[in-house]
Length: 328
Image (cartoon, rainbow, N blue to C red):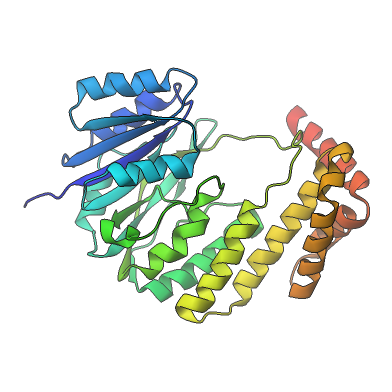
């Protein structure tokens, strides 16, 4: 059997501690027909040097050094430079099982996407998030995505089918005309529905093949409010209506959860910074009420009332809880 080329795009930024393990897991794949593109996104540590050292060891590795532009920009550079019929992504601080691409390739779909399960690695513990063994149409996959996203956001948990790019094998054709949004966080959320729309089928396999390193970042000292996630959800709402004529309570609830998250952020940031977001808070609160979502637990509603009407009290209780968790 003639193996087709898979382009593996690795965005690299200040991950010198993890990069060797990441690249080693790719070069040792049982599937050999790989083009490995390491995009050094202006790293300030030794990541760029490590990339060059790996390129000297393996002719399949190509290194791009560029000014820092963020994950979206790095992936777009990698896509533009890639030559493979198939596309995969790995984050520079993660790693993969040695037969991940062999399994994904065996289940490949022309003008489609293949999705595997994965592990969440936290404090050295591997938590499996297995997939399913099923083939879906794009519309069926969208419905599954909405259900999984609602569950994931509500419970702050991981699900086997989310926006993330790294546990998937893409036929190159599904990226035709699609780019990651520049200077945006939550980049995968912006394009996941476009990619599903351009696919013929989506194949799921249950095997956990990707290892996602979970690194906790405290938001106790956050001084700004991030709205990219909300912006991505609003884009998703429009695409659901335009592509599939879907007007679903789940996207309405996901939007409501984004509004709640921003209102919580407003209460958590220092009081001295809140004046910058007064108009945003009022607009978000107005939009949230217009959604008329009534299915949230009483505890969530009470927290929301504190965020809106007594942010200083919410900030105090939040910091108290964070200190308690740190002590535990």
